[in-house]
Amino acid sequence: MTITKAAQTVLKNTDRAMHVNDIYEEIIRQNLYAFGAKNPKSVLSQTIREKSTANPKVKTVLFRMVGPGTYELFS
Image 1: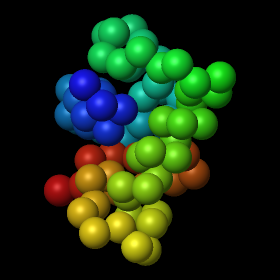
Image 2: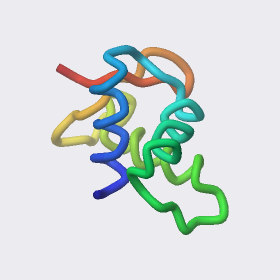
Image 3: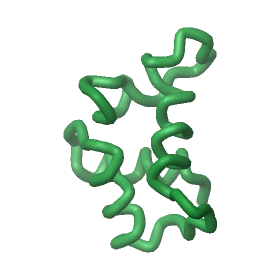
Image 4: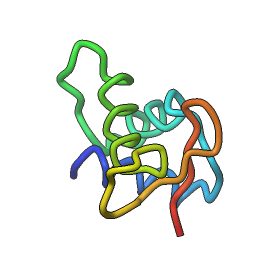
């Protein structure tokens, strides 16, 4: 599973907006992805942001930024 798919899974299962820190904790708790980075929350944040409404250059939006570091699924 990719980081993106793991984040989508967490947000789909909670059906609410979540902060990146909470998304990360759920990914780890559910064992959806094994991060190998020194700063995994930063990697997760960047991955989500790149595919969100916060990125004006994104071609396919998957996440909507609803607050600082807080996202929901884009529908």
